[in-house]
Length: 453
Image 1 (cartoon, rainbow, N blue to C red):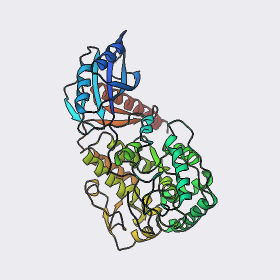
Image 2 (cartoon, rainbow, N blue to C red):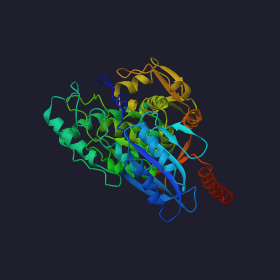
Image 3 (cartoon, rainbow, N blue to C red):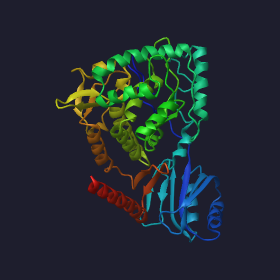
Image 4 (tube, helix red, strand yellow):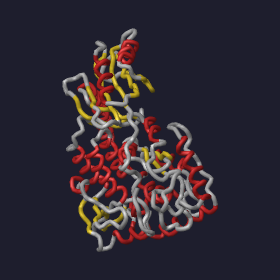
């Protein structure tokens, strides 16, 4: 949770001070054989653990075979290790991997690569459902210094809205909120003032998309847009979608979601007593700051790159990636035009009246975006930033980020499959070869298209 002054909007959606609930997922591949699943389940029963979910898919590494995904209730690392040992005793099992939210729980594979610590991370977009109730602050409960903390009507209204987010699950229609006249008036004041400032300070990509949001998603001063309409528009543009959230997520959960091109968005609005101040992300910050650039393909690629790097990353690397997100998606500046004019693209700036203007003066220090330096830069959360990082372009920032991500200690690479909305872990020769074949097919298509131009 960050604290901001009256002319600055909050620029963070996560809080690293609290730990997640423990959870463990077991992955294993088996050859197609009658009774194969029974043998594996017998091994799990022998390990004395309970299953909470089991799924199977055709294997991409064993033909014929199946990949199984099993969630288990394991309270200690010793229990997890026992499960892995038992399942590996089954002769038809070709690969065993285990990821867990417990610190230092290991991922164990049957190949010689050995053991690597890997925190739990979502593999399918529906896994994001596990984040629904794991907010850390705000949401339905307000801190004592929140402007609406002593307003029972506001608190009741907040509870109504966050309960919709709490109940939402993947595949359901996004909840629509019937905003009150008072909420619309708060939005109108914020919208009108920021809309007048953006042409002088915002990057061209932001300014290009904003009118499209007005045309297609109900953006305007008189009503608060619905995230369902916005999400449909974003999906058509870049594949990004919105998902309602009760409050702040952990950095890991928030960044993991970006790997699936999902952005968690609040639906409640700041307290009407001070429309130009909020101690937390609200719909003004989300919809007026973040949303427009998720419709830009180059920015969407940059955001997803941060998310993919966060999957299974160490706590140390998560902190670095969260810092990079802070200095890019929240408080980033970029160059544009032949003269290299500096403009704002960070949502914490684009939804802030005072800091948007301040950031483009000579007062703060401006440095070129370099992930190795940006990732370790300390920053204040209660005042304007003394240092901003300037990207040459979104494409350049993404290229630099990929080089930085290659230096991380994660023992595998991942790719997002948009067809299945799932993450594929490239941790074996068979999986890499399968990926290479798909790339070869795409290259053949590209070559044919070039010949026809």
